[in-house]
Amino acid sequence: MYSVTVEADFSSAHNLRGYKGKCEALHGHNWRVEVEARQKELDDAGMVMDFKVLKKRLRALLETIDHAYLNTIPYFKKVNPTSENIARYLFDALKARIPGLYRVTVWESENSHASYFHPSPLE
Figure 1 (cartoon, helix red, strand yellow):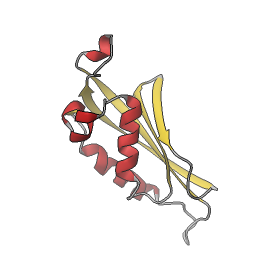
Figure 2 (tube, helix red, strand yellow):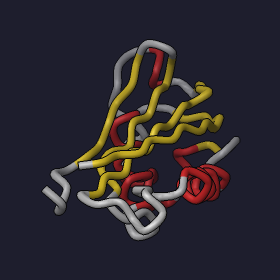
Figure 3 (cartoon, one colour):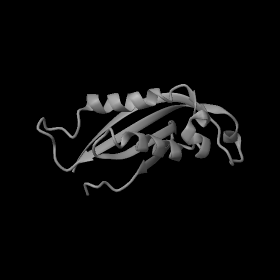
Figure 4 (cartoon, one colour):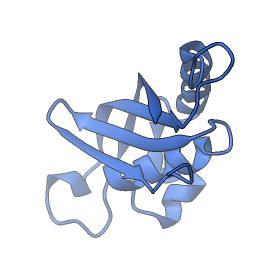
């Protein structure tokens, strides 16, 4: 099994509904996102996927939420914009565009991150 991973970042604000504490108030993060794709075999060029293509697809999605108030995005009007749910949102938005997508990890701070993944159909 082979894997490739890229990182990108975005900034946004959110507040958590149903949470008692500071995070229930409007606040922002400089988020870091890591995306991993896996394949059993390499392509003819010897790659899982071109890093440049993977980065471009991730960045195109992140531009849609960069400097946004996440709670106003239709998905997050129903789903609380926690780090875990942001990872799931990004995964679901990328899975049709990234063959072998395995994991999306979202850092809300230098020391705190959440991931969404599911067993790869390749395994």
